[in-house]
Length: 124
Length: 124
DNA sequence: CAAACATACAACCAATCAGTTGTATGTTGT
DNA sequence: ACAACATACAACTGATTGGTTGTATGTTTG
Image (cartoon, rainbow over all chains, first blue to last red; front, side):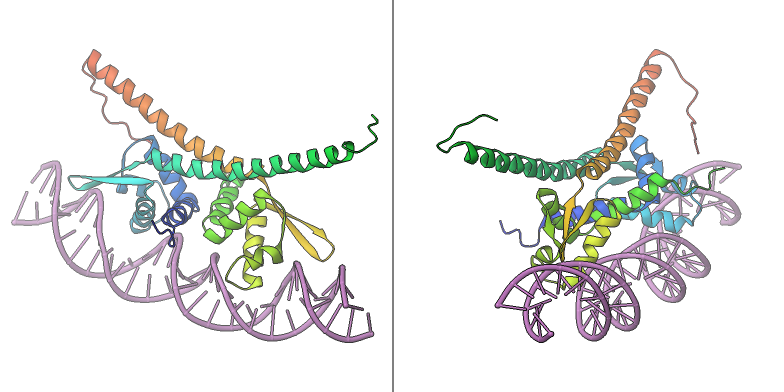
């Protein structure tokens, strides 16, 4: 299980890159709320159909959205599990911070303990 | 009336852009776990000091990290509140999805109770 | 003081990005 | 059949990105 080319980090690159554009975030909101064809999405924005099509492709490559073909339309749907996975990554970052606090607490505890473990035990 | 390019969306642009680079995510992990000088961070990566300095600047502009000056060093520290705010945005996306499910349930209920002719529901 | 260290910032470069237009191909309704 | 619609994709362009080197300035330390 060699993780030299961390699959997880590649995934995160794609996730955050996809989310770093407000048009793509807006598209994601819509397709999470319900299926939309690419042309229906395109009508919502002041840019060409091809531009919107590219945004949808970026979201699809990142796994945040899936497309299914129905007749001449491509219906896009948001993948809430992928969104949750991004959330988990943020939660893991928070955990690192909580670790820092724990270590600060430990340091503070050892400092105060060290001070009181000597011959003289005087309360303040 | 709305020429204000949503402050919130600007913020999200900066957040997700900052997180879309694995070196920056790694830096953020370190500074969330504890304070690090920019040069100490730079020693961890196979790139120039200036490159790491730029990554730190991107994280700082996004509000994910703060710097304080101590002597000749710039000590960087992660801002967990900002990380939480990003998480909140993801949770809001999930809420849209839950809304879709509710609407699907409602549709299913109305279909089973009687024949509905209201099938076209286009929105902006 | 001088040398080593830590930072800041400008200028430059190759690669990627977000948008465009144009063309091709398949699908639907009359 | 055919016109309108929906998608796919290639080629191009200007802006941005992630990296580099070089220079300048302030801070420790020997």
